[in-house]
Image (tube, rainbow, N blue to C red; front, side, top):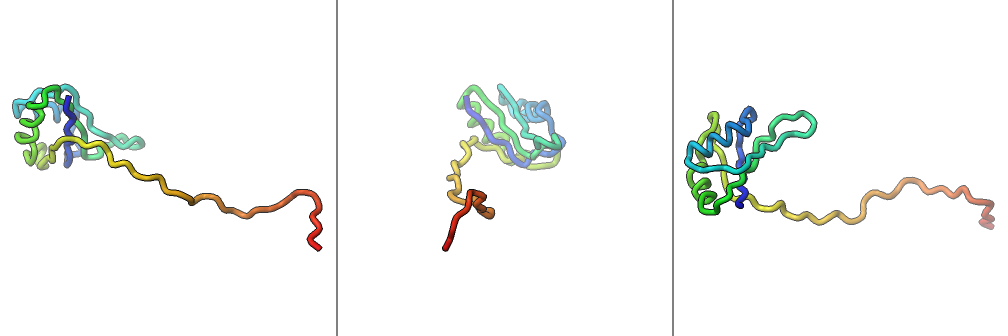
Amino acid sequence: MTKLFVGNLPYKATEADLQAFFEEAGVHVDSVNILRDRFSGEARGFGFVEINDDAAAVQAVQACNGRALMGRALVVNEARPPERRERSQGGGGGGRQRDFGGSKNRW
């Protein structure tokens, strides 16, 4: 199973539109996922398709990369895992520290 990244999607495109786009190019798609903003529900302009056959995935990239859907030229390539970012060290903390403990004679 190969996962392909599809970028520059029209914001009004649906999963059905994207599936039909690939099938018009002669590629059977097993699943389609357009990412949406979790708060507004609007499309974020990119998504992923999964293709069961590796040779068909290569064909899909060649046939669909740069081809227009609803007036926008799509970017289609093999999906890569997100780059792992190091967690930043430090930060946070702070604030004023107060000691409400018993009497402390400083003299």
